[in-house]
Image (cartoon, rainbow, N blue to C red; front, side, top):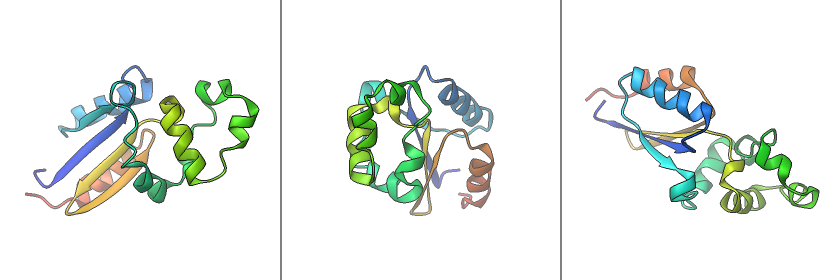
Length: 128
């Protein structure tokens, strides 16, 4: 798969991230790991993620980080801009992993453990 590159964004101790990284390894797919804790949330990538999947899917409103936020902070998250600011301030509120699949000049984004989607992207990727 010389024509595809994969970046997996998340937190290393997250069980879903661990499961996703293991899946890519089992499939023989190389993926670069971007650690939100060490490297932060890449502000340059957020607009693309928001466009691809929407802030409602990116913000994990069932997670511990969200539940620990005060009600005013939660209520203030109403659109891409407010969600982006929250994700920059609290990386753990992002549903994980976020996977970017770059192939043939096109980027696709998934959120969460999505092996069916990744299989489809792999199978559709040009072979090189």
